[in-house]
Length: 240
Image (cartoon, rainbow, N blue to C red; front, side, top):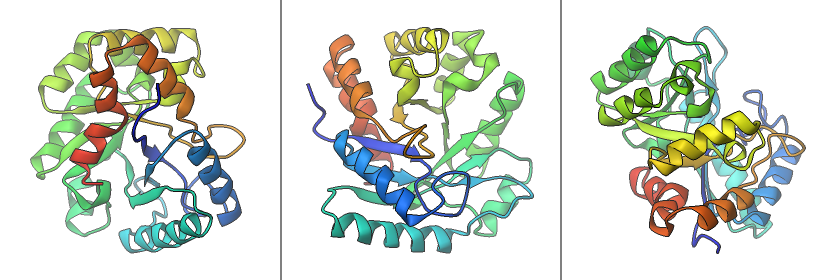
């Protein structure tokens, strides 16, 4: 079974502004992979890191428009939207207040990551900080955090606190190893995953391929739940 839509809500497809696509040529190749795998919507989420040269929301919007124009010219059938992937830092509120951070398509949702070995207390505190400034946190690639892999109840606690949980498509299909796949299967069984993205950075590795993940999910899990995590949640929450 194929999804009616597929939303890749975490990808580094904008050219030349982070460690993802380095040129429009690379971006086009990534878009073609995404389209061939059934993706219909993408949120471009370039990295935002403290003390780095980060693209401004204005730059992100400009590049989204340029990439959308190319996608339309090539009839790829993909809509692209602006976002950011924020590496959590203590002065996040100030950066947000100064208009430096792009939320998910201008909504009240913010994609946030941490270092893999971050203590759970720091992850929880980071999510609370995001909420304290009036935003809804989305935790990027849940499978990366050692504190959460050790104890699934920590993921449940974050969910109870209003955090949305994202996983990478390659982790579902085994591309990040057997142990990661087993962990994600446990989260899926408990319906703790809310969103799926590719976290794509290139067209040769870490690609924006969603189709294999979608096919596997529909075979193994409840159809209504998979509809929600592949497109319904993203389209509703991020107003796509």
